[in-house]
Every structure is written in structure tokens, then in C-alpha cells.
Length: 122
Image (cartoon, rainbow, N blue to C red; front, side, top):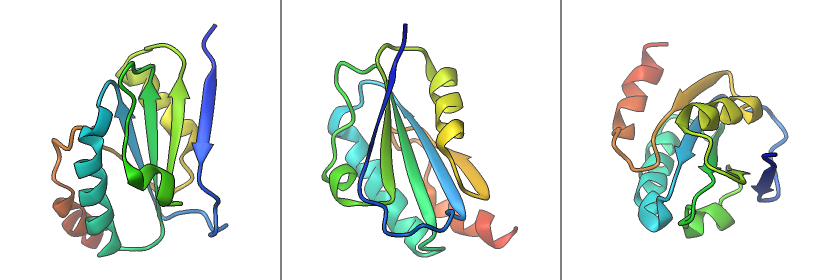
């Protein structure tokens, strides 16, 4: 049986976020650090009302970043075993509270600089 655990920093903002970023992650280790920094920098130009949900899909090398423990906009959901990217996305959507949801891989393959133009077109 699979179990989920959730780690979150203390939530200071009780309002629902405008944007939820779901980030499935499997064996990314500290490679996620660059992606999180880029996300944070680019989202800060759009809004302060966002959350990043990292779903660790049963990694042996789990996501590691100082931002995970210090940024209250980031939460980690952990699968106890690897269930696949689709299951990680589905889990993330269960926890997402934003009006808009974006799915982005933890390896930083999508440039978050495009979020501003997407946001401006809504």
C-alpha cells in the first residue's frame, strides 16, 4: 500500500494562491535547486500569490534545495514508492489550491520566463 507524506513550511498567507505550480520529481537530488530559483525569480515578477508543489515520486535521490526548507510557498508531497509521472501530477492536483495550475518538470527543461507572457494573455 502506498502512503503519502507531506512537508510544508509554516503557512503565513491563508489566501488561496493565484497560481499553483506542480512539479513531479524523481531522483533529481540537488538539480531541482536551479529550477526552483528560476521559478521563484520569474513568478515574483508576476505575483507573490503562488505555491509550488513538489511531488517526490518515491525517489532514492530525493529533491534537495535550501529553498524547500526556507520558502513557505514550497511544499513537498512524497510517494513512498515510484508510481510514475502521471500519478505524481494527479497527486499534485489534489493539493493545488490556485486558480491556475501549471505543471513543470523538476529538471528545469521549461523556461519559466515565458510565464509572464502567458500570464499577461489571460
